[in-house]
Length: 290
Image (cartoon, rainbow, N blue to C red; front, side, top):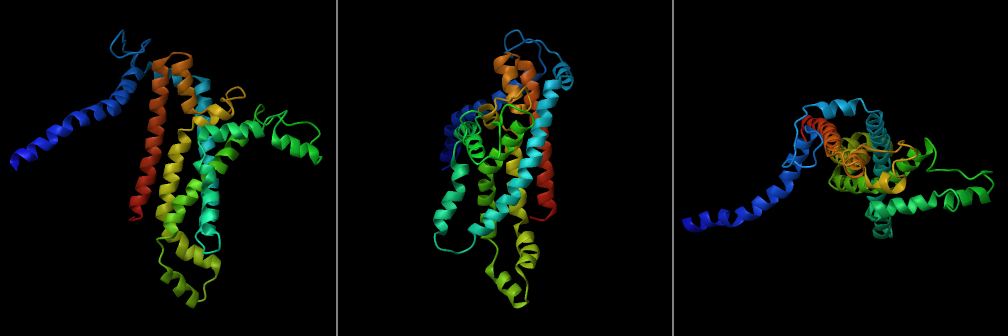
């Protein structure tokens, strides 16, 4: 029996070492490269540069623009997605004929791969052949076709719209799970006391839905701060750099300009921002005794 207890960890050790190497080594390499100079590897020709890459980033207008774009994108889309998600969740939580079909249709945008979703909307917002310009032109609302994705700030507005369309259903799914944990007895007691739908939502649904709201906002904020596929496939960061996010900036710094040190520094700054936001949300959850 003692031999079996000792043999178990020894059998698991090789797999755990491989997993640790796959997960931890890229993180370690990114941290080390962010403090290096003119190096693509931590093993060959590495030169320590201290905080030079971080200072350079903070003095680079393109990086500041990508940071502002990411913050703006997150600050606008997440609250709207939350409001739309609450509305969808309240509808999907009710009993009506065809509820399963409606739930499936509501989750369809989220089920679509982000790249495919972005390419689909990119075609519909095309200046010459897009669906929206054709419809608006046919009904006489516009005299000239609108360059949705090639003008500032309409490109950012389109990117926000596409994000809201896709991920509101994700918020609705999480909030729907929270709604189904609320006991029906509370609503029955409220109806006996003569509560209206608005007061029922305000004093029963919303307080008990708070844990699900905080979790969904946390997950969606982290996802929005890491936005890459959507701007890459929808606008390619353009026009100019008006829709370039931090992830897209880091990707280009590493793979387009082959500057692993600067790109690694951008990734770490992004990581610090996301971690700070995550800790803030987690403290809110704990403070609420959730």
